[in-house]
Length: 216
Image (cartoon, rainbow, N blue to C red; front, side, top):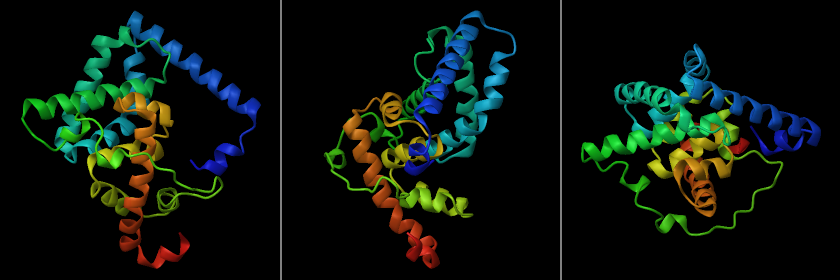
């Protein structure tokens, strides 16, 4: 997803897509409330790869991510009636996943995700980035190339806060407002983390792919 691609979509097509998504979310909400047969399996098939990827980036541990993956879907099954369809389903799903990661870390007195629940820090100061609307970001540029493993490795070198925002924005294609809902952060904080995260990952990607530095 790039800014240019978003801008190229006509208003009518965009409105139709928004309405379709809204109807799908409402249908999922009603189905979860009724515990509709087969719906959970359908949702797992649709979102399993995205959910596991998000958990992997948050935990950095495949075994733990897979355990939490199962817990997330159990939580969806048990608390499905709480989803009202007003937000995209994936926003609600990632919120459940994030809360379970935090709960897991708290129970085991680990500190690696403390920053997720301690509020804003020095890196959340407001920024005024200047990025041309039609230009791809460094993250988008490298993500389009055949170097996904190196992009993933670069992401894992970032602190959890900035890594999470980049993953939600560019992998999961959530809006800034949706990311704010998932992370329970102010919109200005999300924007700051996003631009700082892009600034932090650019030199890491250039070191991993030095022959492509001039392309950025």
